[in-house]
Image (tube, rainbow, N blue to C red; front, side):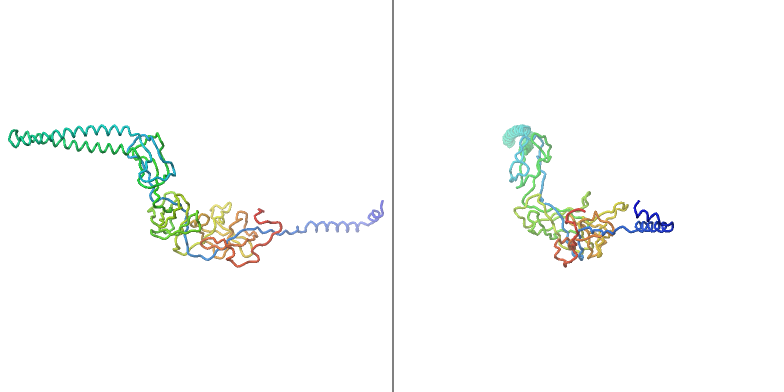
Length: 402
């Protein structure tokens, strides 16, 4: 037995009790101590600062179409034997597009032609007899009744010749209608019928679009006020740096039953030679009113999980670098990636990227914001520089998910 053990055994009862109480007190103090504090790492987000409301300039996407686009077909029915064009071909006026089997129409025209020639021969004979009977009547060798009968017979044959001539000409036209010709310089957009197909009269065989006059077709919402002859700035995606002046030529009288938008046609007084049917374009209408709502990116909207009303909200970055969800009222879309909303104030910073990972009151750090008014402005240099625009986070690389 060691000396230290001997010393502990020599202690009296009160000393043992005091020692045990001290050990228990130390254990209690250790168990009640608070865990070490941890600092929440702010989540990086991208924000957009709302600018003052300005005049609206509605921009709509559209495509180039021909003003005159026709579905052409044969005036008579029959079996298609030849087709001389393909989709995308450019054809001239008078060029043959397709042909029907002309056998039936040729036989009908030949039969009527024979009847017409026979009737004409009968009429010529009756007219010659009538001239002789006229001389005999002048000499009173025949009665007036006999002369009138001959005269009536000749008149009947004359009218029969006229009727057969009209029928024969109509049959010849029908034989000509077995060849479908282009009436204008056009481009073939579609070919609904194929060779060896039997088609009915006026059934579409080809869709032709005239190249003489092209225009831009857009669909505008009910809230847009577009009138005829309104000036429009048109840009083509093939040449985004070029702006062409156009005018509204036509506005649909009623909205589309499914999309509830109005079809608008914009004419181009100056038509570039490189513009082709089907090209994408954007039409910007002149400012007409002061915006009543702010415009934000669609990515800023979210619907909280479990919300029975499914009301859209946005995250707003406060001055203390915490986020707060704000309910908004959604308006009409602007372009393809923005939308009008009500319920926000100018100057607020709306989170546009990273909104799905935020929670109420969470700390967040913003990248350099971009100012928006009616349209987004991606140039962050328009805003005064902020030292706290980007706060470095240890171990975080921009673009890396947390």
